[in-house]
Length: 173
Image 1: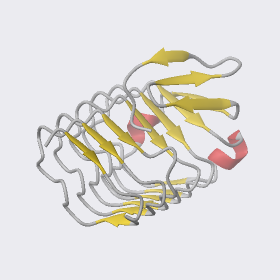
Image 2 (image 1 turned 180 degrees about the horizontal axis):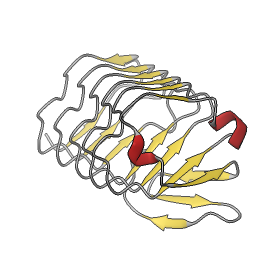
Image 3 (image 1 turned 180 degrees about the vertical axis):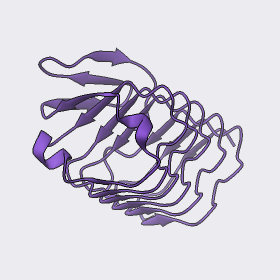
Image 4 (image 1 turned 120 degrees about the horizontal axis):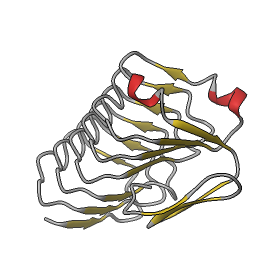
């Protein structure tokens, strides 16, 4: 399997549903989905696109996208509240993380071994960003440049307004 398009009636994806699908490169999720369970896309090394931006996801489970080496941009939509432990562990090519303004908790080691994160875009204010609970093991996000408000996210690139940047990359949005 290299590509998956899910039907609009799907609300969640079960634990490990696509784990170890090494050839999987793109996933199109339904707009009504509310949860991605633990290890759903675990070790899908070639996954470069999993569109979350137009979904109602509230929770991303433990190790849901761990070891997805080809992800370059992670977009956590406004509906998302919780990022599980190790959710994006060892996604070593991620260079930007876009965080929706309703994210409240980022679990332990959610972004550990994501050595290339250079920019974090938060859709709310800096004060709201400080209220997000980042658990231990997310210290690689600390030196990243932070941008607040005024961002527009598109499927194949990150475009921002004002003093932010435009980057044409494959995305996880």
